[in-house]
Image (cartoon, rainbow, N blue to C red; front, side, top):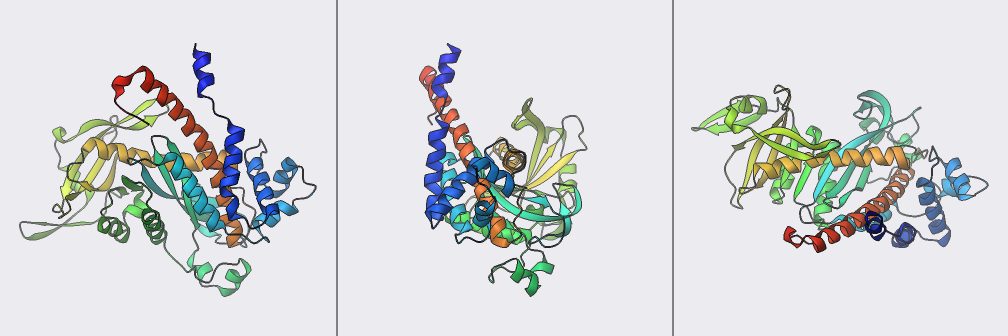
Length: 395
């Protein structure tokens, strides 16, 4: 019986892969580019240990890596057009009114100084200052799965202000220096303008500490849960007096009754349980939104506390905020899988367009895998609904 159910939930991955290739084909101007891009995607899905030009060429049966290298470098096509198609493909698969947008950065370790954007800079991936590139990414996550849907290379100031290096790496004239939060602000604003269904925007303290990022979301009436440091300065008005404080001080005054045990999503060993509390800061807006300081502490080490700013309708529950905060890990899983399995960090191209082309092709491949997983979930969900109509939910 179990075998029969499993067979009924299997999806035709070959057919789905061809559908992906057809979907992204308009990004490529010539039939040769489309075929090479298809071979590139096939190579990313292969067991090749390194997703380099030579290895992907060998997987495709090419004598030399010229075609693969040309796809990333010399040929003429738009990486942004491909990324737009990948995003539409992913959101069509995963889109849900309860879905979330997650912003984060990841590092790509490099040798030398010629790859675009490379510099001695802090990499969260390495946990220290390294010679690396940094990319800012957005992921979309819902009950159906998660996938990367946008990306941009961070261009350090030394690169942005060096005409010779810019010219050699083909950095577009319109690209200037921008901080990572500024990049995230533009990225998320564009995604929301496109109508990506989004219940919450999530990010770590690099972005949560940026008042411009928070203000942009608040002006749009967009709910968020953004991590901040324990020492982040807060200025509050109480009894007509301005008080300066911080999240750690505010939540340190809470009694035991303010903390509730709640799950922050599923972990490898089941629900990830923490204790959560929140405090409203500021007045309710005319649109019915409230801002809170949200705190999450370990059940085993109550001195280990993470802090967030949350902004949402006044009727949003603490459990809903905790569940949203717990979804920030989804982008980390996107990075992990894309690097371990698909060669996200194997890019050999040194140019601006080469980097964005490589990332977009990997994102397309990852979105295909997300579709397979989402199809399995929907099939299984449909069977649960047929046998258990009391669930009251539909796909």
